[in-house]
Length: 335
Image (cartoon, rainbow, N blue to C red; front, top):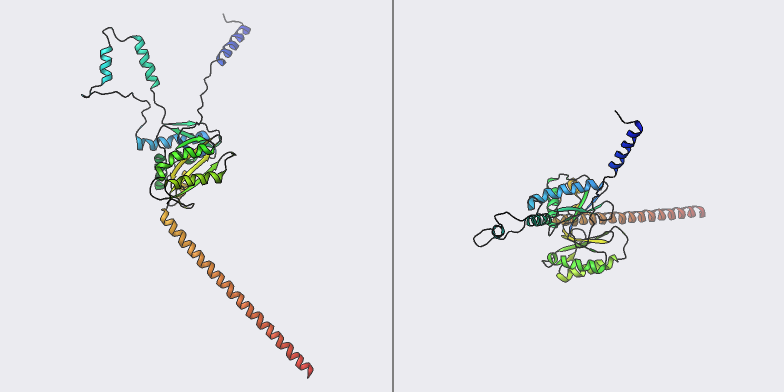
């Protein structure tokens, strides 16, 4: 016999309420912290799609350079001189006929879960809209980013739709003048204690900060010249670019190659560009264009001078003709 409608309705409400009360575990967000390194990605909209494109591109090229990501860290198993596994020998000696103890099995499982590797690439929150940071466990993200940029510039294949810029970040520090200079000193040794080269400093910020831009750039320039006094500043075609990006409460630092030549690491513009000429070729073209511009300016100036001379001559002729006409009129009147 079916229950009455009122009781049936009460059961349905209880079932619905119990279903709604299921615990919901929200995903724990990770935030950008000082001391991390990775990739700074920018997009115009759709940050989640930008993150997916970052994962696809980074994993694709990282598998080529470093091999596939295994997903777990295998504990280092020490081998003796004969090549036998010492850990296996210890396990065999510690095992008994009755089998391993349950507590030992549990401890081994706990260790195995703790020894899981961190993901090679992981997105973290920056607190800035349309700005994504992908942290990495790689020691230096610059070679991977440069490999991606060079491949896109060579193949001319557009690898992203929402991802625009992909800039490697070697150091993340607090937004303070002392912290930035200290972090910059750590990464400058590898790139500027070499032969003389050209460099530039790019300073960007997302929020208002109390840092004096000019003084900071001067200190970084003196820091670079302290490594080698023969380094020269070149804002048009620098070989090395010191990239500074101030976010909400942290600063991203990196030293990248051919920043201007590769369209400021803009993947979309780089795929649309015809060719990426070398620095020497661009310098020669600029010199030729400047020379041609100078010749054109000189020609125009010469034409203007000639026009002025002709105008003055015509004016003088008109004045002389007018004066002669007046004289003839006076002579005729006197006669």
